[in-house]
Length: 527
Image 1 (tube, rainbow, N blue to C red):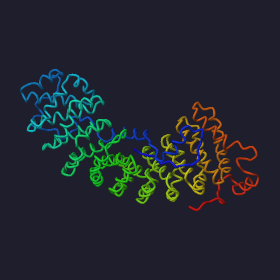
Image 2: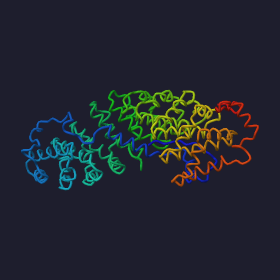
Image 3: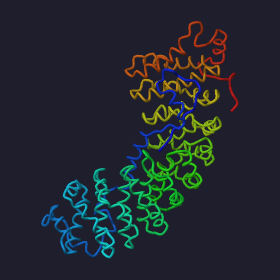
Image 4: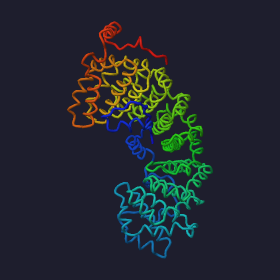
């Protein structure tokens, strides 16, 4: 899960109700973006339900024994009775019918199947005594795969009948079809949330999957195995047992060199989940050589690879300054010009998020971003992006305002950033307004320390920022009202001086800035 670095500041802003928390969390968690991306990922990676018209490997000698059709349609009672039959042919027919029925694209009757009490009957066919009847195991595993593609309650019903250890045993089946189907079923279960994921992990699945991934050469099997591993890495409330997944990391990095796009995509997603945590976890991923293998995917057109690869690198950048430097040393900044102008909004949003974390780093790291000509692009992103992209751009600007030198801030302000930046105070999105208020406060707090407060106040006023701040004092949000009021009261209410200037400073400002442009010629710090 991504983390946002925020720059620490020793001065407090009393009226901000969560100001202390805001400054103490140097690595702010961002659940909203992650949930959105993971929902998208769930759709893009692989359909959970296996439809019988899309599976190439469904062919065996008995597949034509029975086909659901208008002439012969089984009820749930028929299926249940058939499974209790002494005829193995009739039992297999019933399993095939149930599998095809639950593979339907439209309204598969999963709940009816469970309520009919058929589900517990499947466990018998998954046991060792059916090892010589792999068709039974295959059909049952497929049925469980489709049930696990339903609701969380459907998945829970599979766990309750004790199917997980039986499916893990099927991973060792000599029948590749059975093994692959068991992998898929377990991947669906693990992908349903933290509790099912941990239940699957508790049955020792990781070493088995690792062994399979090392030994199999079938691309479809590798796709399924890496996908299931990615689901075992997913979710973070709570996160999975990192030590249990540790042996898979070298294999996942190795899969980044695969020639199949789906394998690469799934490996990238797995690594993105694993880097979404503490700096210690990020360091493990770094030491596995991940960035050397993944950086090239920041320039591919395939967003199923590009987006998770960008998440991995972004998570590394969100770590400590040494880890951020590691990503910068691998050339991440040279990819950002393209990524920040990408046609896909999720890519631009994540690229802006990554840049915001660079801007939360050291002065040298901020300067590296500036040297790569990213400030003009950042300015354009703020002006033209949608609301989610603009939030990320605003965070990048906030971090530069808070941690950059006077000269670095001047370069951004000279691009005319304050007008669109202050304009976002009119956004209907309250969180956006709060972000901009936080940034304005940071900019003014730092300006009061470095002697540029008066200039900044004038520029904010020229950008209509003061008008917007005053208007926000009528906002329906108490928090926004208090934040805006405090800024105006603290920085724009001078009686004897104009925004902290005396007459001599005003004259100097006019001489240095005849066209009202912001210049720090006499205040520049060496970077």
